[in-house]
Length: 195
Ligand SMILES: Cc1cc2nc3c(=O)[nH]c(=O)nc-3n(C[C@H](O)[C@H](O)[C@H](O)COP(=O)(O)O)c2cc1C
Image (cartoon, rainbow, N blue to C red; front, side, top):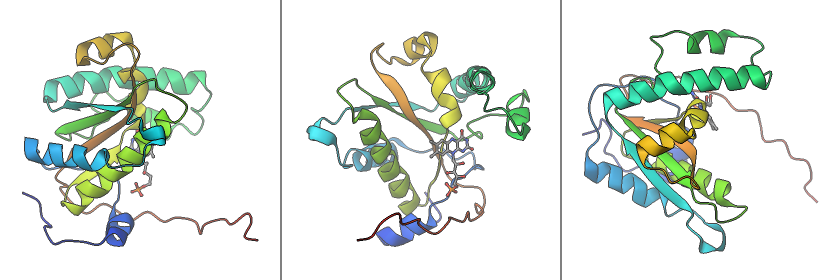
């Protein structure tokens, strides 16, 4: 189902994964989703709490509605926190045709149960596992942080069956990439001390 089925090394996955923002319309089947979730839950987890739970959304209309709602909340949040300077990102969010999920067919939301101070860390570690596993299967992913506020509204949580006490932490789109994603660079690691 994907373009690359060759086994790849962990280092190749780490170095090769890029955020994908352009997808074919091909859907991801249940076995693949379950394999991604199985990879996610292998992440390290503080005090072995495994505080994660998952929402899988593959309905295009529901994804579009969620995108529209999340955009509103995200723009408000950026204004409120004065992170709206520079503007061009927000201009995009104000466009009615902009889908924050880039028309990917699948959104996996990693949610956290309120079990302690490391829930957020655990969920993001699970997120990276999921994205590297997806890459190794020839799939593309992108974290959609701009969906978090919209996902955590009481209205959305009720619609998606997320209990009140559980929080959406890491929304990740998954799909078959429609083209190459541009490489992004990284600064050299800054070493503060090495004694
Ligand atoms: C917490 C977090 C939130 C992000 N939110 C978004 C987002 O809302 N939309 C988007 O297109 N990319 C989002 N990204 C992807 C980053 O833009 C991307 O990881 C970064 O530009 C580096 O590119 P790379 O992933 O291709 O290496 C997010 C990444 C992280 C870690």
